Amino acid sequence: MRGGLEGPGPRLTATPCGCVKPDLETGNLLTEPIGYLESCFSAKNGTPRQPSICSHSRACLRIRKSIFNNPEHSLMGLEEFSHVWILFVFHKNGHLSCKAKVQPPRLNGAKIGVFSTRSPHRPNAIGLTLAKLEKVEGGAIYLSGIDMIHGTPVLDIKPYIADYDSPQNLIEPLGDFNVWNNQHKTKSMSQSDGKSDSCDQRQLSAYDEPPPYRCTKEKPKYPEDRTSGENNLKRDTARVQQSSPKHKERAAHLGLGSRSGQSLSVAEEHIDPYCLEKSFSEEGTDKRLRGGREAVVPRGNSAERQLVAAHCPSRMGDAAHRSVVPAWVREAPVAPLEVRFTPHAEMDLGHLSSEDVGQVSFKYFQSAEEARHAIEAVLSADPRSVYRRKLCQDRLFYFTVDAAHVTCWFGDGFAEVLRIKPASVPAQMTDGAESAASLGCR
Ligand SMILES: C[S@@+](CC[C@H](N)C(=O)[O-])C[C@H]1O[C@@H](n2cnc3c(N)ncnc32)[C@H](O)[C@@H]1O
Image 1 (spheres, rainbow, N blue to C red):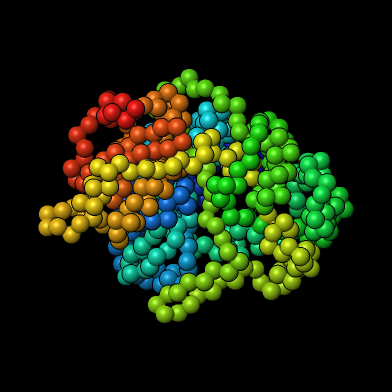
Image 2: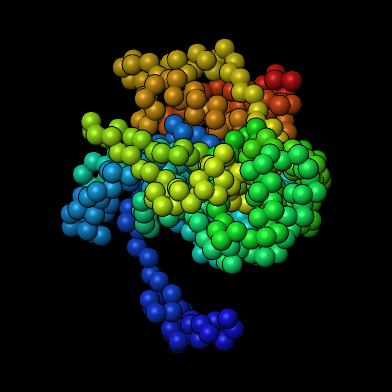
């Protein structure tokens, strides 16, 4: 692949002043946002690191008239889909620079190549979120399960099509499969489990003696799918088959698990405060009621399904079809936190959601319960950066979601919400200056 497109691109379009001129041919695209997201998250702090963390997080995107005179035309038919990919610009990155290696929170300070991560700081600051499409109304779409902040410039919307977008439905000739990976898996899995059931045995021997097809499946990723032990990125055994308890056992046998706890020596602003999280959980069939109609999106065409079934009849949809991710992606450095609300915070939440005249009310949440669930979801996933988690444990943590400005602190295995003020009147505290101890939390 050398010599091809690598060299000449940008040179061809450079202006005398050194700027790069937009040119479709060379990929120097001049983007124009199709709209700016209205989101329940007003700032990066506390915004979920991946969309699946907080299903109640909501947003609205209105297609700009400068893009299409009749924005509603561009959304025609989209309401038939349950989920959409949103491509957007990380416009609040603060700078355009990025590093080849970054430190995802899940690696607890360890470094890894930027392209192995979902870091916002990348050569082109473009984000990709799979969001649930709640409704299409005129030239606007309403989303939930998002991880983008208010004002995010959106570049594109694409429908999520499981048959194309999920390895669950892929059946490829085995010849395409990465041989190294294959051999490795054969070795590590056969080392790890001599007691596989007959279907698994077939899968394992399949690596030795390739059958005509390979099936992969993206399994739902739940927090409880964690393994324990040592997670060393340099070890090839860091790639595990996902999800089933059997594979968790295998991963444990392989010695995969918690990481070395390397400490940080860099300032917080130099750390990429992001991580990889579970993706949307998926079912074999996606059923949705839309305006009285039921949209059913089958997984794979019938021929594919037959092949899958023929290949592994007893466990179709399980061991036979999965994708592979490194173990660290599925292992948070901290277990999900228990989330508590002080009586004061409970009272605040009640006030915030009351219909009293003059009260600020929620724009995105439909009830106090939803607001509570969203706050719990955000905190349970521990939104703090590695730096804050390790070195500033007793600092108060603030974030704003919809009309709620939340103040909390973190203890061992829990987060406690101390106050919830209307976001228009944020609590008068200087960030980081006040410690949890000063509020009598310890
Ligand atoms: C780790 S990124 C993942 C985004 C997307 N799901 C992806 O994989 O490309 C999510 C984090 O980006 C940050 N973020 C969200 N919107 C942003 C924006 N417009 N500019 C900069 N950072 C943003 C928030 O801190 C959020 O927790």
